[in-house]
Length: 179
Image 1 (cartoon, one colour):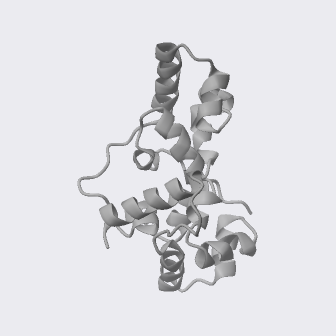
Image 2 (image 1 turned 60 degrees about the horizontal axis):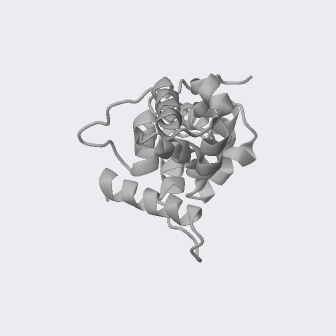
Image 3 (image 1 turned 90 degrees about the horizontal axis):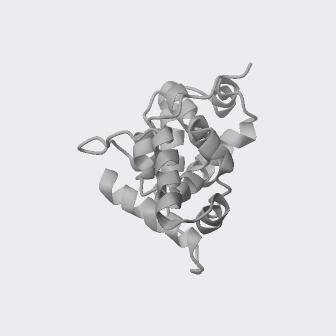
C-alpha cells in the first residue's frame, strides 16, 4: 500500500471510533508487522516482552489486534518497541516512511498552540478539555507527558492544536527498559 494510503486508513479508522458509526473500523496490518519484525530477529514474544519490561500478554495483543498500537499503548512505549524490533515507528504503523519526511513538531509546540487557541477563542482550559475529550492540564504543564498517551488521544489533542499527530512521533524518547 504505502505510507499515504495506510495513513488515510488510520485516519478513517480513528475517525470511525470518534463517531457513532456502526461496524468495526479497519486499521492497517500493524499486528502482522509486529510479528514479522519479531520473527525476523528470531525473538519469541516472551523475549520481546522481557526486553520491553511488560507482561507477555501486553505484547501478544499487539500481534493479534491491528488497533492496539493506536488505542492501547502510549507513544513512548510504541517507540521503545520499535527500537527493540529494529524498525521505525512509521514502518510499524504505516508500512514505510513518508516521502518527504514529516517535519517534527515538538510537544511544547502543541502546548503553545493549545494556549494560543484558548486565548484567541477566549475559552478556558476546562472548556477546551471538554471539546477535545481529554483533560489538558497535565499536558499543558508538562508537554512531554503527551508521549504517554496512545495515538488516539494524541490525535485528539493535536487536532485541537492544529498539529499533525504523526509529525510528533519522533519526539518521544523511548521508555526505559525495566528489569
